[in-house]
Length: 217
Image (cartoon, rainbow, N blue to C red; front, side):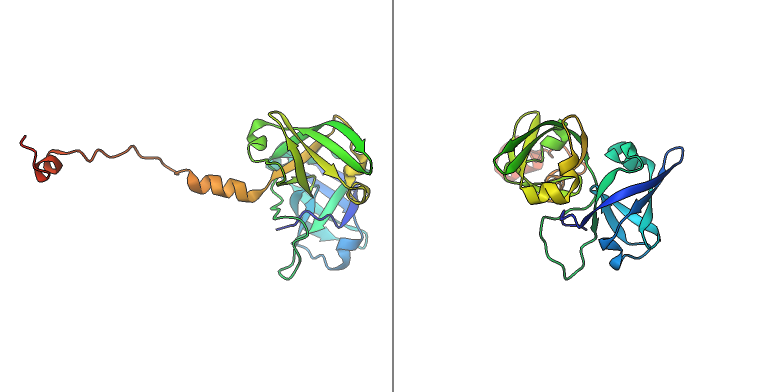
């Protein structure tokens, strides 16, 4: 589990592509201080497992499903990525509950400055927008952000300069794809309120019931 508070920006050193998978070699610094093989790392919001370590970085496997659902398939050597280690049990929730399981991708439609803030308007599919609420949380490329506005076809966030500077948001341009993960709470609530196998209502109006109620039939 993560919180969406990016720890550092890493750099893709090498991508070894398979038929339907890839191995990413990522240069990092800060997160290597206690990273171990088998640990989870959010890479642009995607939960990956460190498979090998060096003094300068780590490698991670990316499976077919992840490549299909995220923008990791569009990375190239030299690309920058947001990195966050899994939250320790005694850590702080600086952002919100982030699983690292991307729901899909969005497209940046517009970027505009508003004094010191930077507004990003992102187009997303209805299946993603249904869980986005104004003043709620959204994860964009692994960054925990607050939703400022929502419409029928897109949503907007307003980022402070610090967030833009220490994450890849500062490199994003209109037309870029970003990874999106909805607030997990809404998805669980919907699942719990939706019967797994809805059964038709049972007809309780039977002959025995009518006789017990005094009807002469």
